[in-house]
Length: 281
Image (cartoon, rainbow, N blue to C red; front, side, top):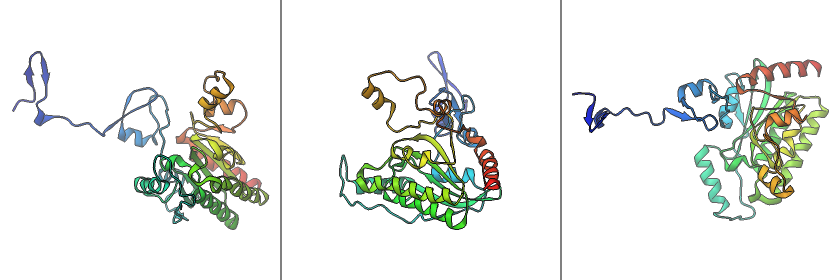
């Protein structure tokens, strides 16, 4: 059987010899170029053409940062619905859908392991779980990571990826800002290093609390970091914001970050930083 057949003035492959490429390629949202998925995975979900950093999940983030053999902990907590909140749909339904989609109980994953042999505790947020919003379970899980770092005298890394506090839990959500901040103050008194890694996006109450309290505050390239979003600010002040406003490079230039670190360089960068910080402690 021939591979091609002539139809009018076009040469097209017959249906029984169609080459299926669906799911093998991803289009970069920044440069528009197609990327072979295997190449994208090999580059840690960074576009090889323009260095656009795709969002990655909390478990992938931990696997990227920690040496093999790490362990997850405190992943059994589940959110309740104390306010019986309903907007377009009941909050309980949103929780069930997010849990089914992500395989997580909430928007946070804790792990204890090593970075190039150095013991660390990592708490990573999951943006695909209701926008990485911080409710009571997220706050309590991060607070437990802080407690574990204190008990074991181990450096702490928090990876932020969040739209802010979870409105469906009202004041219970906002209380987490103070609870985590108080724990980090105890960590500081004990001279235990805390590195805050901000990814796209890090906004709202997360930025207003623990994300900006690190001994070292770093971010991935192009990450949106701020309290209110750019559109809200423009509508409030009725002015056009500068190019790149609230992106990590803009914050670095204006002294709000210590470094912008490409994803492929994060693990060795954090290793060097912690080696220096633990030697000085």
